[in-house]
Amino acid sequence: MLSRTADHLYWMSRFTERAENLARLLDVTHQMSLVPQSVAAENQNWGAILALNSLQTAFSKSYDEVNAENVLRFMVSDADNPASIYSCLRAARENAHAVRGTLTAETWESCNATWIELREQSFEQILSTGVGEFFEWVKLRSAVMRGVTFGTMLQDDSLDFIRLGGLLERGDNTARILDVKYHVLRTNGDEGTTDFYQWGALLRSLSAFEVYRKVYRDVITPARVAELLMLRVDMPRSLHSCVDGIVRVLNRVANSSSVAETGRRAGMLHAQLHFARIDDVLSKGLHEYLTDFMDRIYDLGEGIGHDFLVPAS
Image (cartoon, rainbow, N blue to C red):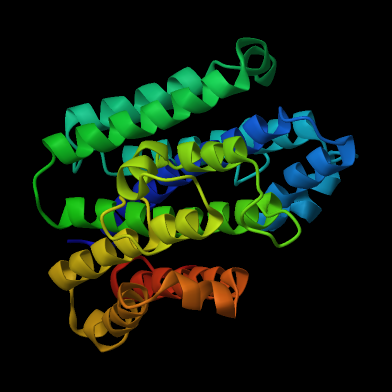
């Protein structure tokens, strides 16, 4: 496969997944803002989203105050913010357009229709309809695009690079959501007293509430939430599951460059998650573990770019 084609497919998938995960992060923050709390605490939660994505400086250039409406506007529909849902879905559509001949008609139409529908919605319309409904729409459109892609495309290298981009982005964003929300939700370091409904909102934001109930059949505890979202390979959005999929795809598309280093690093990260115990992770510091994971996912992305994709200009 041409590296340029692989590059467009990979980034089409990453931007689509990024938009979905941003919707999930904003949705759970919005739900938690409905719980009685001080204005300062609420704004701190919204500010954490900017910090998580290293966007404080970019935000401050256009907005004077960190609050719910400003952060939502910046992260949902600001065309000048390359990390907004608007920009992500626009970039996904542009990458898809560049390789229309590689995609099935259904895959292209689902991506293009999503962008057209989003483009016609102003932020004021989104607010009046309800941001929660908008976030559900983003998640649904991402699921539709993913389902159409996997259901209609040939099982070849093209699909492998689409899957690879999605898995990398999903793993990174699950780690980001868990990192920021785990520490916000803990109450004075006592993991047993945090509000049940807020932990439920976190699980629902990652489509994991019903899965948690099926796996643990008990009250929701922070340690088990972390275990489910990090170490359970049978949980689709967990770190372990994402890295497991990355290793499998890398083995299928391997070339002489990737085997030497990128494949090795992916295998090491997979082994670390496969043999980890949540008690050990928490005792050494969850934030430190997740930060290291995000650094290593970024490193894998750089390696994949070097081994397979168009070199950065």
